Image (cartoon, rainbow, N blue to C red; front, side):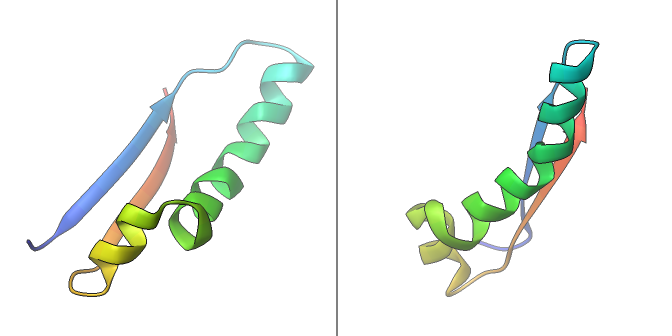
Length: 56
């Protein structure tokens, strides 16, 4: 496996709740990549996995 890329694309509602979720979203993706997702951490041993967050 090479050049693995995972993109999270999520839409958020308007308003304060949506703004708060939008602000927290990149940190959640980073936590998933760095310590919560055992699959991506295992794969990264042999191949880097690029994760990104996009507001849909």
